[in-house]
Length: 204
Image (cartoon, rainbow, N blue to C red; front, side, top):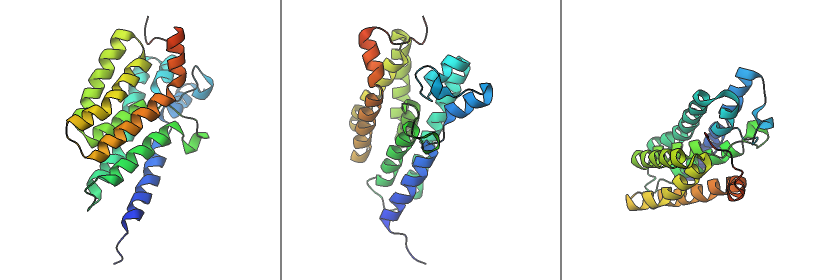
């Protein structure tokens, strides 16, 4: 039996994670429920916040949970089914590719969401407690500011610090840093609207 080289593990998991991340949950649900293309509505994002504009709170939370699961699955598989990977490199690469897949999905011409829920899902897979803390932070900040974008940005910025202080592998902290920078970058238009006072609130 021919042993699979380590680089091949990384490549296989990277491709699989990207394809799973590319599954356009919000797009498929809105299309099935209304026949509309969510990319032509609101912000044009396929994420949960834009889904809420079309289908309401129930589907907002449904898409969030499904996207989080989408982020968790490939990372958990990579974390527990690869051996001899003491640095967790395969899991980290899988996590990176999931959030890229969500924001730049192959199946929708590379136009997707902002990877918040899928990003939190990858954190849950790497460290459940960090994921739980980030969910609480997101919930509290979003509730009091009434801005999903503010809750998302602050929660993701907290991620690398939590990974570090809870003594996770250095690769997890590096990933959380990369994810935070990438997801904040994807929110650049939201940040501009926040500064102008024109960002949409989750509720009035």
